[in-house]
Structure formats: C-alpha cells, structure tokens
Amino acid sequence: MSNEVELTAEESQAARTVFGDRLGLAERYVQHLATSGMERGLLGPREVPRLWSRHVLNCAVVANLIDQGAHVADVGSGAGLPGLTLALARADLELTLIEPLERRCIWLHEVVEDLGLENVTVMRGRAEQVIESVNADFATARAVSALTNLAGLTIPLLHGKGTVLAIKGRSAAEEVEKAAKMIRRLGGKKTEVVTVGEDILREPTTVVRINVG
Image 1 (cartoon, rainbow, N blue to C red):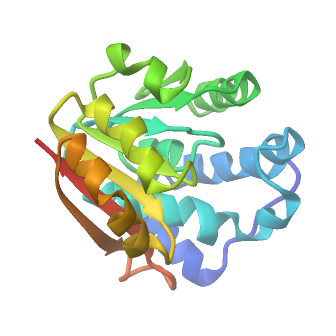
Image 2 (cartoon, rainbow, N blue to C red):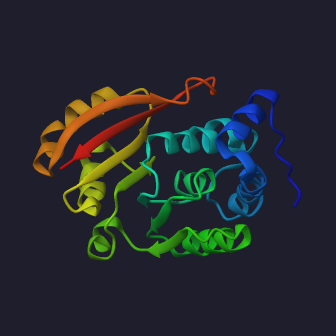
C-alpha cells in the first residue's frame, strides 16, 4: 500500500512494547487507516501523520486495564479505535465491535479479514439495540459522546457486572462529576479517572473507569 506512515524512534519503541510479535499486523492496520480508512472518510487526512501517537498507541495501551481472556464490547467502533488496537495488542481477548453505520462495518470486516483477526466480531447496530446479544466483561468507547450519555450506552452491555473503560481527554473529571447520578442509577459502583501508558507514551491516555456490580 502507498501512504507509508513512518514511526518515530519513540513511537517505534512504544509500538514494540505494546504489540510485541504482532507489530507487523499493527503496521498493516495503520496502512489501512491511512489509505482506505481516509478515502472512505473514517478519519481526516490531517490525522495521517499522527496515526500512531494520537490514535493507535493512545488506544492500545488501554489493554493494560483489561483482564486476561475477557470479552470486550467496543461501542461506536468507527475505524476500530480502540477495538481493533485492543484485538491486536491482546490475542487473548474476545472483541465485539459495535458500529451503527454500514460503510464503517464493511471497512471493519475487510480489515479484520485481511489481518486474520479471529478474536473479533463486527456487529452492526446501535449499542442500545444489541444489549440482548452482547454480554461483555468490559465495554470500551472513544470519542462517542459525553459520559452522561455514554454511561447509558455502555453499562447495560455488562448485564450487572463488569467495567466500562471510556477514553477521554482533559475534561474527564468534569464529565465524571456531571454523569455521577446517571452512573449510580445504572449500577456503577466506583468511578475513577486513571492514566495509562505513562512509561511509554509522551502523552499518556486518560481513561474513565467505571466498575459495575
């Protein structure tokens, strides 16, 4: 594929740490993002130079917060962020990518097939439509919506027991405050803002972690 996305030395070291012997697959995924992903409007051309640092590594380090062998439901998967990065970083996980838009689902299917990811299922639909079909240990989301709304999309997929991991930015603590009542109403027991990847990323990833049940 054209549009080679070069890794800086720092990114390269981080990518090796996160993906290990699956780094080649992760590189192929990034090429999909930089070519067909961009062509089909899953992300803008401005994002291509920072695919590794801002998107792929930023998402993949969240795998450190997930238990061995867990079933993870990724809500609003879009370009596979964080879902596909987690599947690449951790072959032991079972991923269900939930995405309402058909064109995105088609792209996700193509990428999953090309990378030979047997631990990934793509499910077309909105999170609230697939509750009966999905019973996850962890629910993940990135850039889907504010936490007050996101809590209602993710917590029900855990069916009373599990963890929500929502990748957020600087406003994470503020969002937690606003969503506190809603989270409690839905069964959230403990909500905290954690950072992950401090040891390998220049900008660590901020995650809102909600423990349910």
